[in-house]
Length: 463
Image (cartoon, rainbow, N blue to C red; front, side, top):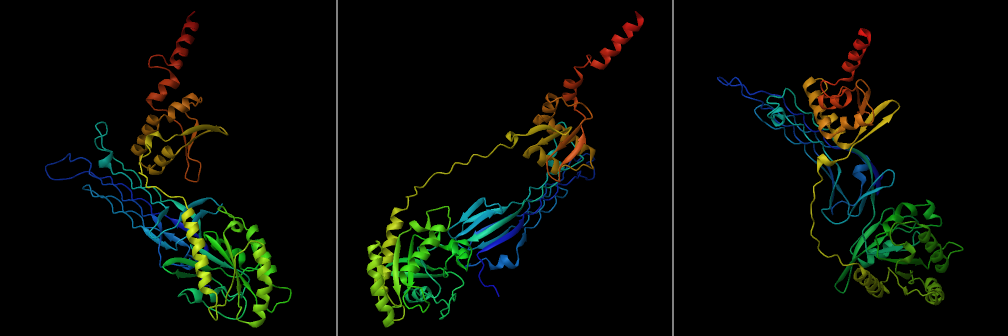
């Protein structure tokens, strides 16, 4: 049974906004009470939140579909609908959110970091909010907007200072257990470790985290074994520690060739940050408590030091060399943290985007005038096309936005086909211009081209 999952695809949907209410105040001796329909409630959001108590994405592997609740519709007597409840999804520290096409949306690092992955729809306005001096008693209300939907990829990248890498059964888990209070599963067969293990190491008051990355084999960067699945957990580490097995019984293997193989796999793995092969490196010759292993370590150490590596001989069983290893790793982490750019506190200036300034476009496609833009498409979703007054209100809004003026400039005539939107929710209708647009299409009042043509025909027949 799967107990650790570090990459899942989830399907999320924000709640729909509640519809606005159409209501007229009715009370004895007040025959004209006026509109009192309340607004609909906002749909709930789907929010990702970093939780330090979560270490795997297993829950979303079993339940990938998550949806927030809808907002409640408005009611009479100016009663607003209740907002939908947000769905909060706890994720591990170091979770990367991206689209299925690979576009990165968020990098969630730090306890409590939040990201709204699917926003709920806004509630529709009731007829009380739509009342104006020109429209004193609207007989319609706006519909609530549907919530956003998305299919996103959650990918966990372990947040650790040092990564222990090496062949399967090289003793990485044993080193983590000896250096920290972590207790990973340890056995004498390859691929004992199937999940990254984290341990906190204290080197004379300096604390840092160590990750035991599951064993790599030749071809790991191409998907062989478990390497490709867990190389992503090395990306965030400041330093790498190559754990080389000096007691392996496999023929054709020795510490030097193992190191060359692992470095090739690290160099072949592509990452957006610092290449894995360019990280600070320590080399550990492990299992020197075995007599034959110590002899092999003594032969390999001089060659590795000639290559420029710092080599430490140690044994997780006898704790030989562990203190030196802990202080060596602490030095690498301390230098890496000091080299990080200092982030100065900045003042955040909020500049809300004006809704009325959102652009729109009109284009002629296959004989149909297609209107695209966030503003007109949102208005279409809010309109109840079963209510003639609501449709007229939509026409007025489009005219004020300048859509009809743009149609006239492109040569649109009364009765031509106009489509608003480009998705399955698009609305297509035969365009009938409002009074303002009709003046541009048919000419000013008293100067209608059709009347002028009839007058010319009568003069011609008389003559």
